[in-house]
Image (cartoon, rainbow, N blue to C red; front, side, top):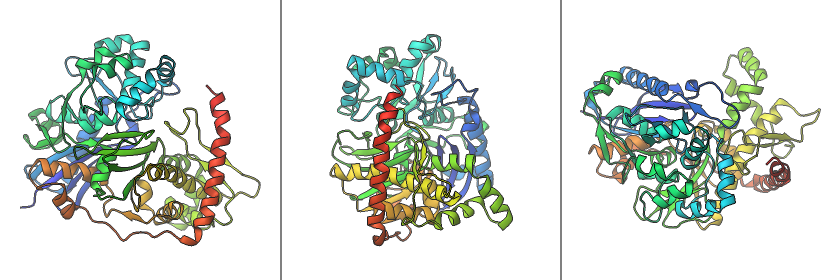
Length: 506
């Protein structure tokens, strides 16, 4: 009898529960908006969610996914969990959440970054964590709580990333994995262990004893589904739960993108671009622990990719909704038609895709340029998609200039679901683009880890052979290379011009 695997992918926009067969086939998918659990807005910089409410929503999704799959919960071999890295959740000494959780786009702690830069700790921290510290990471957020909400800070009994909190609710085990805590800048990347020196540099030495037990690999079994969690979720008591990993590594694993020369681009809430090597890349966004010892996940990213499109469709697309109703098609089909109607040879409008932090500048915001009385709705639709492709190109170019080969892009996330978007992406980066034949690559990545931990697969290679299928690559249009290179140069000059304004905002 085939064994089933569950992958839980808790993202900043939505949280999904996916049931897979051992050959990677999706049996069922259920989801809930993550943002639905946000509390009352506390002002600019706060991106928070109700931890317990989001767990309840996810537990209902688990029940629904099992029912929708029409399977016996006893046939589930293992469970893997992934979520956004960074941000943080706070537990008291009894294991109860004591404050809203923070999404990774939370930037209340920008003032803390300024403090670190002023006292000389910023570069010291970056040297230890092998990355570029930003405000949405747990260290600065915890320091912010110490400065501004000491009552919460003093009551903290433990801290977890959100995926770890889900694991905790499933197993009652207080644990994490090396990838997510290393990628969230809470680990010394030289020793691959927690560091008292790092906690002191953050100004939160009290937190060293609040850190969870750390598994060394994503496929390590950290616990089993408890009787309480079984009653809450419909799962079978005793199902093994593996340590999992941050969503960006989960997408790479789910895409099977482990070969040299493959760059994984995730066009989702964040603009993630990553590959792996044995090298630490200076000035990279992150060089986090990888699935193999002695190698690093080399990342270049900013805090917004397809989320720019989500903002655009929510805020400015009433026209597309009307057209969709008239034509009897989806709004996104209408938008694709609008985008395809614009030739890059005639395009004039530019879009800077910075609706969320962190970005190229701490004060950067999204903007349209070159709009006049002749600008059409189609021009703006096209500009948003092109601008998103440009910010990915910026990060991919960084990785390639750092000596990491980029022969093919393995594209995942919302952008990968549109042939129109994918072709523009390939034409902008001028590299063949491959798409995984699975819309839920993050969930598949942790399901694969769960399968290894549960003995369904011998190792990652066997799992990739069985569970990962790649569609035919989308080839770039070479005739458009010069046009897109020129438009990218113009787009980049706009970024440079805006730096003066962004810097004056401090």
